Length: 86
Image (cartoon, rainbow, N blue to C red; front, side):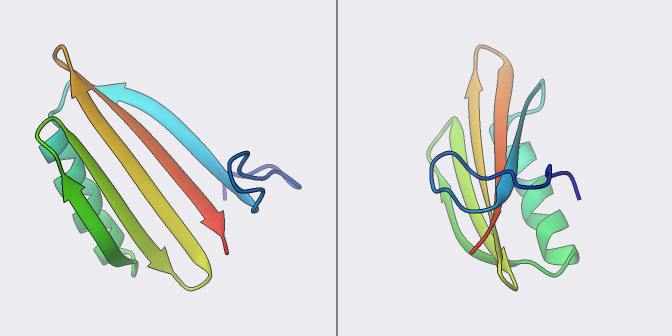
């Protein structure tokens, strides 16, 4: 559990948390890793979109949803992961 008590997603107002980081791995490698890890942890992948140097993954587990936004640019990949309760 990484969210702070009473925190919420600023876009939706729903309880949740987000994290951002960069990596030298490609967007496709990051998307494949998270697709595998989410399924292994009991999440259901609801949608994926691969658009060349970027990917979007959406998954659900119970009342929680997660969105991954993965963008590759100039040899680095930026990843934003947002989790929220419905």
